[in-house]
Image (cartoon, rainbow, N blue to C red; front, side, top):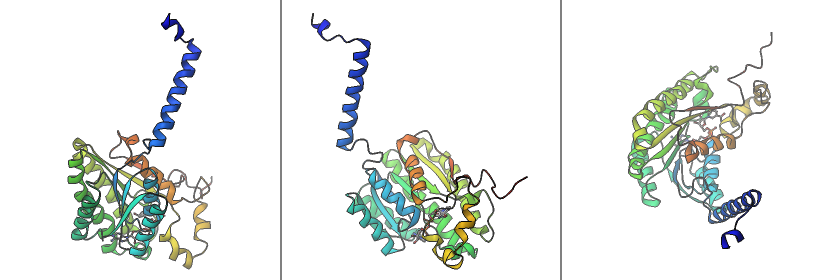
Length: 286
Ligand SMILES: NC(=O)c1ccc[n+]([C@@H]2O[C@H](COP(=O)([O-])OP(=O)(O)OC[C@H]3O[C@@H](n4cnc5c(N)ncnc54)[C@H](O)[C@@H]3O)[C@@H](O)[C@H]2O)c1
């Protein structure tokens, strides 16, 4: 008799199931369970500006405990203040990623403050002037050596934590030529080769390493170029099938995918986020 009272038609049962899962989703959202990086301890290099800052803010919105690294103290502090004002968790460490002792300190401070690092995003790069002038040391030391030093420091902590995710910011320069930037292009291609090889070595520890290749993203790195050449963005946008240049948030969202468990089967991947510039050359017509 009782069983009769509680037996639903197929339609009613579907409605009840939907209602139940809706309530579960709302409850879990209220508890903060739906945050994609809840309590993930994250280091982001070069997070005092541009893509690194946007990534730090996006990750904090998803519940990460963010360590903001940069050599620019004012920029780094501004990122931290923005996160904290929104109720997120962040702290600034001034560390030069090309300096092994600084990197060691960055990871030691992170561990002492929050615990073993779960996520590392390598964003730091030298100045646009150094990129344009093909200055070997700043490009190689910050872009390539810095990425390697941070990965070397992260891996033991991630092993201890039972796994982790490393996201390396490369560039479309790794795939296509741009005048006067061949050293930077080599560094960005090197990041891909290094990441893919290392991904093969550390997969057995549950550590994933993926690369993102952004197209033109409007960040502070472009400021002095725009000052010198105010029409540069108008000319560049014509090369983009999507008809716009990138925003730092476009890359932050891709980094979030690689940092979160949603990409748990992805390692050694190379994700191009470039508004289509490498897929189609818009300047050429037959
Ligand atoms: N903006 C673009 O169009 C674009 C395109 C493709 C790839 N990228 C890549 O994205 C990443 C972020 O670039 P962005 O546009 O946000 O640049 P950005 O100049 O806005 O940010 C780079 C940050 O790195 C910091 N930095 C410099 N040297 C450092 C060091 N030794 N140690 C720690 N931090 C250091 C700088 O102070 C700066 O805050 C870089 O790897 C860049 O190559 C950018």
